[in-house]
Image 1 (cartoon, one colour):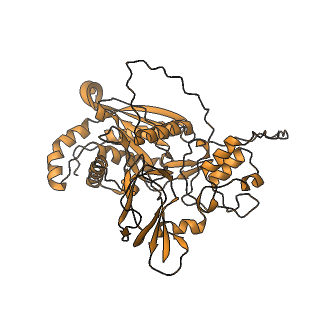
Image 2 (cartoon, one colour):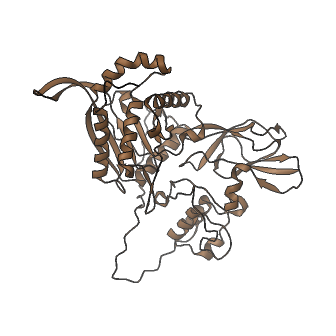
Image 3 (cartoon, one colour):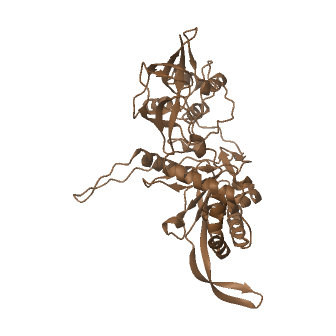
Amino acid sequence: MAQVELIMPKMGESIMEATITRWVKQVGDSVEEDETILEIATDKVDSEVPSPVSGVVAEILFKEEDTVEVGKVIAVIATEGEGAAPKASPAVAEQHERGTEKIASNGVDYPELEVAMSEASVDRTGGASSERFYSPLVRTIAQKENISAQELDRISGSGMYGRVTKKDILAYVEQRSPVKPQPATPTPSVKAAPIPTSAPVFAAPATSLSGDVEIVEMDRMRKLIAEHMVRSKHTSPHVTSYVEVDVTNIVNWRNKVKNAFETRFGEKITFTPIFIEAVAKAIRDFPMINVSVDETRILVKKNVNIGMATALPSGNLIVPVIKNADMLSLPGLTKAVNDLANRARNNQLKPEEIQEGTFTLTNVGTFGNVMGTPIINQPQVAIMAVGAIRKKPAVVETEYGDVIAVRQMMFLSMSYDHRVVDGFLGGSFLRRVGDYLEAFDPKRDF
């Protein structure tokens, strides 16, 4: 009887762990191929994990509510067949053959050590004296902490096959005696520092509680969102630009066609797909907004995948992604927006539907806010907020001169990563989105 290892799957670009919420199958239960064996959850999405094979659950390695790193073995399934040696499940076999350890793009303790591993090849020795495998993150931490190759070889690993994980090396760093780096020989040349920089660590202020304070424990999703927000601010120097745009033509067009649009396409049209259409056009004009940062390298994304921040009934946010948004018509964008938003609120999103975003749009106008300063959704470098549409007096240029008229006005604000997006690029992109919105043709068809 052969054995197949069930691996904690990768759930997103910036997700390095997931929490087991429920074991659907227990030890001794039969399971069919693609049948759900457990349910897991991250800060972004809850999901079911199917069995890669048919067989019997032989061993469960983690309990419910345990948080497990991506890539770890969580269960063993016994199958009919020759050979008793365990083997990796089909979903991750290729990863182990390549010796690739996929990790999240943001480290809590080392936000400057972001690595893009989805397509990278890995050096197995990592500079160590043996053939032991070390992930790029472990090797980078070792270098930062002045841990020699021989010292690294002596660290006990808790990962698969004795692999040293991030947790192992950080625990070792805490326990070892501090090693003072040898002073470098002065040279007349000046070496530029890498773009990502370490964030200072601040002690949390003491909290004083009186009898009139109610203590509410953060839920799992809120804790992880809090970590991601702090991580983003530590990783990217945020700058925010603003423009005000006249969207009178858009408001009038939508009011005129919304009934006919729903009759023809079976979808209610909101302002969101119109905003996404303008953003997608502007990204094609300014492709350097559609990038991410890998240490000192800029990764320019060819696909325009726009995430839309969606509020959940719990008050938390999730960001489903519209893939290749620049290739969709307005009815196609409307259908995608409505479908993803509805399934997000009902916790029915698939893991791949929150992955691979290259730019994010958030609508703070939904809450009656006129503008906002959003936090970048890592590893992207920009996020745009659209404010509430309000009637305001505005100067309108006509062939007979300037007049003051009541117009539908809206603020756009965009936060961007100043490591790679300067004010000229960020401001020009934001203005271009506004220009597309103001140039909306009120006589257009769907």
